[in-house]
Length: 467
Image 1 (cartoon, rainbow, N blue to C red):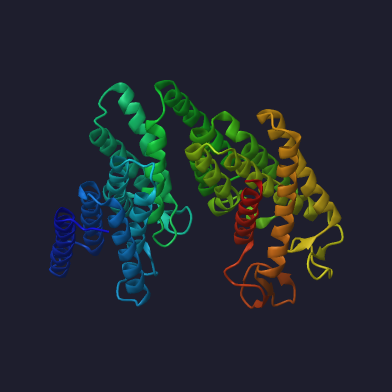
Image 2: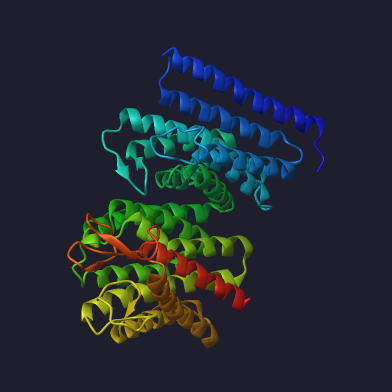
């Protein structure tokens, strides 16, 4: 691939600005002119805005994508060696933003101006949210892994709103409405970060979301705004009813908006049935871990695969992605109903692989009551989408059977991979506690990971077979 003189000068200028800024900020920090936090955020703004300039100016964007990919591996190696540490815990955030830019440049349908906007949003809005949250927020909440705040969320939303107005030159009343819709998903996305993962998720989701919003007509945008107004009290009610925690309700809001934009009202049929039935079924058992509702990690692990498939359907208009969305939620529905009702009826439980007697509620264990309940859950969801979408009987069977198989695969993975511990009293448990000894499985693999992995694998298998 040819590197023109223009691109060479653009790259050298961008890299030079970043290096000069880094040196100046290090001196300012040593002199005590600025704090470490302010220094990090100023470098964040300069580096990412410099990358925005490069993306906007480069002629050979494919080559630039490979350059960003190279910087990702270089920075990843630097972090692994421990040569660069910006937090008390190891974070890979610095290496993830060039990976995000590379991915965006590899997506052919995204216009360059939207990619530039997404990078500016990460550079400016994320930094302002971090500074505002640290200095002005009295209460920090762990939405996923890192501590965030509603004050930081508001700062991100307002700065993204203003940035979108200026960048897209939208100063009319209709334009302000579109810009407010553009700002909401990036601000919500920033709340959910695992060791700096928002440097990857924010620009990618911002670009895709902005692309969707700018394709809406005025009537569709108004409908989305009305939906947003409806979703908010529903999320508050789900917290009040203890179906979801605050973080879980926030994740549900994020997913609901993406569902609405990607599939309209019909897109809520499958996840709505799953959320309602799963939440009601969970109240049958005295589960201390979910007494305040499902958290964001549980919401994402059960819904993110379906969301991704629906976004791909909106982009490609290939029906198998829509069906994969329904299959994914059918898997979650079948597994959730099976687990809750199987535990409630307390029937004889055996391990799905060894066929030995298993304690009730331990992953990998199955009972005829729970298995039958899982099948009924899959049939219930399959029947609902069959009636709403007017599918053929063959598609109905595809969805139901795939959902039921997903439930069984979840049990197999639970038996094979999920960590099991022997408590100090000799009882088999799934959560590590003081005095407990791991007897089998992998420490990183808990129930949420099992749910996610089984959903991904069975949904991908469905796509490959159905195509």
